[in-house]
Image 1 (cartoon, chains in turn green, purple):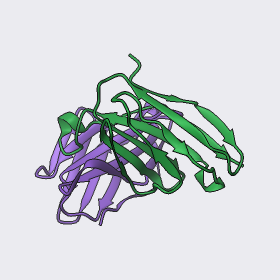
Image 2 (cartoon, rainbow over the protein chains, first blue to last red):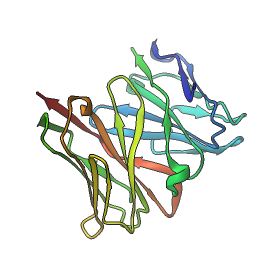
Image 3 (cartoon, rainbow over the protein chains, first blue to last red):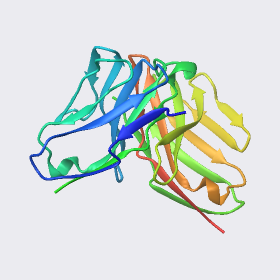
Length: 117
Length: 112
């Protein structure tokens, strides 16, 4: 079972470069989200989507773009990478709203470690 | 506002109980979750508690919720080396049910 697949697992960028982190899920989940994990700061929500064609900003959206053209895919784009975007990025999906335990369980990918020099 | 805080580190001896604490500021929180992150991996759901419950037990795990103090704890009985991981609490609120707010995470280290 694939679950949530993220690529690449590791990436090194130079300041100013752009790139896309890919995320795909095969569970037919409506909800998808991107988090970044930094030491001592836990997970912070970047962007999320409640269904195809619908996206919204999380806590730290600046410098990132997302789109959701299909239910399965939710790519995260870094427009002009900065050293402050060095982090581990996690994509997650859930069946539905977090307000119910039977739909709110988040399934995470294995993470993408990004270093910006 | 939404803010979830945890202590960063906890070290326990194998076989002892571990207690991981979490405080949150939003009194309207509905569901509270505990997630576990093993080294090099994503997070996995451990357990959850609904805001109208005080306690929930699931095998070696006991979740306690004190709504008055906005305090959540996760107790792991008979802690094993395989329990070494980062533990995150997370909350959702009635006015924004589309997302979870995660705490800072507690790194549990179990030594023999």
